[in-house]
Length: 140
Image (cartoon, rainbow, N blue to C red; front, side):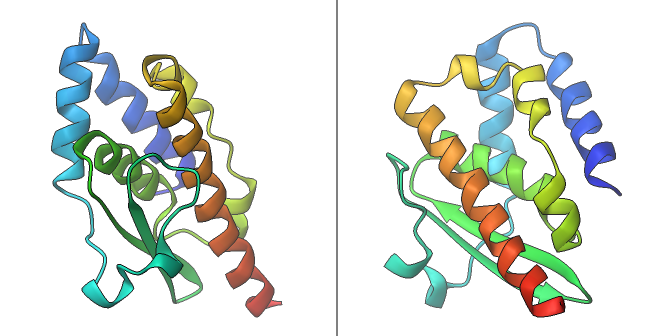
């Protein structure tokens, strides 16, 4: 699936819920499906700076596509990173770099996060894109 198709699926899924309590529960459930980071990558080197909670992310390149794994010590944050990884994982670095994150506004996520969580969301996106830039450089 392309990034655009995955984003459209996420928007559709979130539109099924009438209120944010249900959407938060859905995010928590998504966090439980997160491809978990291997214990050896749960280090300070893999922590996303700017997040209130601890979020670890690791990336590998497989067949010219970036595969992400992650974990967090907070259930909502774990759901947020799960959504981002679902969109960006197993995609070509160029597609990750060029992708916009308009779907976050479409599902209303940013406006329903505390300011510190919203900052953390931005930091997560930046870090995933930085991994993609690093791998894109290796391809060139």
